[in-house]
Structures are given as structure tokens and as C-alpha cells.
Length: 171
Image (cartoon, rainbow, N blue to C red; front, side):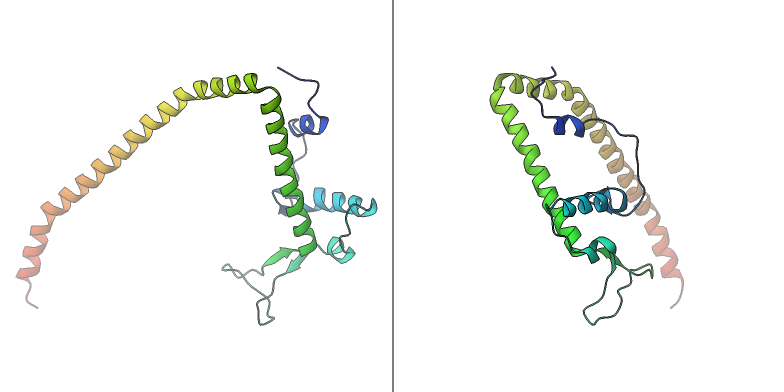
């Protein structure tokens, strides 16, 4: 099923890596370990022109409209990623999605029958899982309905006794 015509950049996206950095994420990618080195490299190569202050201080304090420091519900100060970095990451994200779509469309159009057959096989293979999930969900909803009905019945039975007690107590 492999194809030597698949570009290496697509193949590399599908390869597992051993690194798992634990810093501030931008688009679910580590800012310090991935974005800053990448964006510094793209600046050096003339591909981007991200201001040096954004690269040097990528995490900024957030301020309210009146100029005061913004605090979250937990009482911690709110931070944000410098706008030139977040804007560049957004552009990369949009281009990434466009490239994924373009690749899929290219494969689907150049290998139309094989692609259609694979989609049909995937749907057929997933059907037992879908059927099981639907049955389990139906059972779970039915159990919830029965529990609510039992609680409602219990309240109806208890309600007259409570009403009698309230009527017996002088106001």
C-alpha cells in the first residue's frame, strides 16, 4: 500500500518521535522547544521578520482595557503569547491544513478507485463499533430514564406524607 511518490514531509508527519516537551503550548506545540528555534531559524533565513523582542520575550502579561494587569479567576496573572508569534503560528496552521487538504485531494483524484474502495472498507470496518456504541448509548439512556422515573415515583409516594406533616404544624 506504500507509495514512493509520497513526499518525505508527509511521511515524517506520520513517524513517532521520542521527545515530549513540557512547556507553554502554541497550537499544541511547545513554544520554547519548537516554535522559538524554528522561528529564529526562519528569521535568520529571511523567511520571516518576527521582531526580536517577540522572540526574546514570547510570553507577555495580559492587561485589561484600563491598563491594569489582568488576573484570572484563580487569582493568577493572565499571560499571552506575543502577537507576532501567535500570528505566525496561525499562518503556519492555516498553511498546514491547506497542505493536508491538498495532499488528500491529490491522492483521491489521482487514485480515485483505490481511494473510494479504501473509504468504503473503512466505513464497513467501523460499522460494528458504531453499532455497538449506539446500542450501549441506547441502554445507558434507557437506564437514566428508568432512574428518573423511579425517583419521580418515590417523590410522589413521599409527597403526601410531607404535605400532611406541613399541614399538622401550625404556622
